[in-house]
Structure formats: structure tokens, C-alpha cells
Image (cartoon, rainbow, N blue to C red):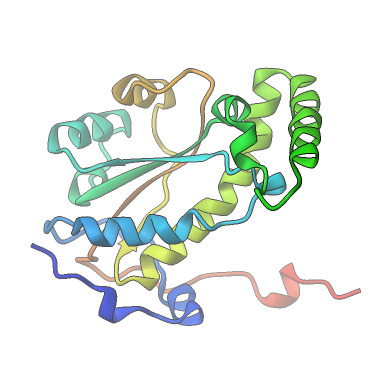
Length: 207
């Protein structure tokens, strides 16, 4: 069994600086308490109107991972990792649960007004438009997930190289959901490539 790594928590800068995409993992399963700790933190990610459209499907079953590997064009990291999380956005589920997203500190009247405004705003969109909007928010949670995994002593690799329709069928996901990424993760069994990034002058402009 993989040991509990909560004693190896990294600072945020250390987690970001040490994170590399890893494609070979130690076979040991991830303790359930570690998985819970990861998602207890990730669920705190911010989102517009606090709608939290992200949903996480964590796959540890060997047979399911084999099917995901096939849907991912044979990429070995899918079965090498002890856990694979599908990060999806489900705005239709959000709309069905709008009252649960409104802050309980608001007055009942203000809560009802907020739900009505959100229902009107998103009701004017198509399912596809709502899905794309939710995906922009879910990508925030994806970034938090990658840093959290690293910060708690594990390694990961975000992927979009997979047949999305096949993955939906494998996991029984609704057609309307959007994928932010498939993320195999576990204890690294190899070194990642050194960072190769643009210089700060290329990506940051001060005004």
C-alpha cells in the first residue's frame, strides 16, 4: 500500500515549481483518506456565482482503466496510474440545483431573487452554450486539482487525447457534459522533463 503522504505537504510555490507531467507511476493504490483530502481542497476552488459546475469521476478499477486506456489511443499512463480522474462540467445538473449554490447568509427573498436571475440568464442559452460556459469555470478547478495533487506528494498528467464519446459510454455520463481533462495520478516512478516555458516578458504586460 502507498503510505499516507499528508506529512509531505509542499508549499504552494514548491508544488507549482516541482510539478511535471508524469507518465509512469508506482503501482501502489492511493489511500482513500488521501483521495478525500485532495477533493476536500479542490472543491474550494472559486467559480462565478459559486455555481461549481465541476464533477470528478475517480476511476481506480483495473478493468475500467483498461477501457479508458483503449479510449485514450493506448496511452500507457492511464493504466500505469493507480487512479484516473475525469474532470467534467455538468451545467444541466447545476441548473437543477441552483438553490444549493446560493449563499445561505442571504435573506430568503434575496436567495429567491438570485435563483430567478440565474435561471433566466442560463435559460436563455442553449445546452451547448451553457456547457461551454461551465467548462471555463471547471478549468479553474482543474488547475487547483493539479497543484493540490502535487502539493500532497503525488504526481499527475492532464490529458485531452481521448475519445470523449467512448469515455462517456464507459462511465455512463450524459451526452451534454463537457470534459476539462482526464488526469492519471499517483506516486511518480520517473522524472519529468525540465520546465520549458516562455519568459515572463513574453506573457506578462504591465499597464
